[in-house]
Image (cartoon, rainbow, N blue to C red; front, side, top):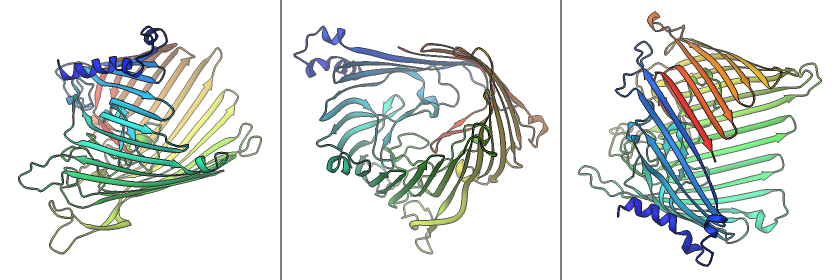
Length: 551
């Protein structure tokens, strides 16, 4: 029997062993079955002006379907995926179809055990985070065994072993991990409103070494310690991670240990919220394969300390975390000007001000004869907290959200950005981008659950492809219908032949758990990022249909 088929059959029949005294009919009558389906297909057209690539197969599709079974403490599930072939912007190695995810777990008050595929995160994810994000084309789930134990109130101990998903196969490295998280006051003073938590993690990756030139460490270990305190209006947390030297394709094969430090603090009270964070990252690209690049087989997750913009033009230059070396900080202040005041108006006004910056770290030559980053050496010298001279990114923004009348709301904002394209996108020699953006979003409620929204955005820059103007009109009839038309105009391109309109028409229909949408238009080349993890999006001219449902 094919091993993959054997695993699926084992998952389907394992509930019998967990509840061998339960009547067989209970597994049907008293069980819950749920699922969801998502399907997206595009028909691609050629467009040499915007750089839309020629594809031999004009129709391309991404399809996902999940099925979950629950009975008492048992949870089981499978996911079917099909990429025939994948939509543009997704790795062609996804092409194919089959059962990509299958698992069974059992949970009670003391423990939780899982076999098959699972996702996991230790702390903030510095040394271990397995997760799925279809928009980024990421699914680095483990295939193996996971155990979680809660021996006393407030204490959680986790352990796992497995291999990571690599498209339709598993990666070469074997990963073992353990984590302990203790909410101290939950055990000692369960009535306390203050919460103090400490945690420790350890992760090991094994990958055999058969390289004829380099002596790679086969076992690479990483450790992390963390703590957090929540007390009334205040929250502070910190996590430090350290990793054994791990020469890899992403760090130029240097034998330097890695470390990372993340600090976060917040304060909130009526009408005021403050969030601050800082991080230091030094050679912390941790994967289950030393040859992996891009977003493949990542073990560690290094969160961004920058604002994630929801509007398209301010989001044109998003920051991608630099795991080989980065020092950054972020500050955000939210303030509500009270209603029925001269400045706040009748309904009050929300103001958000934020600023972020990312720089290189301060690294020095090991000696006069070894250049920084030379393969096969220690690479460079550095010290925790040392900030370098090269700026990677900054973002300064202010956003005002104000309800003008009972039926009219205004959102407007201003953004200034510096974007080191040579570093962030890995394009040596590219000039950095200095960009200024402004946006206005006007939302008006009409009668009979109807709504119309107008959006105008402008981005001004002399670098890259020059300045952009964007306009959107969206009309919706709640809760079922929505229509929109968008145009992004690259009017500032130095080459007049490429001063192009990127129009997009969209219509969607919702009914209960079902959603059907159509789109037709052009997509500019760019990068989308979520939490500092990014995916390149190619230029495209397409007509598409998307369907999703849950049951």
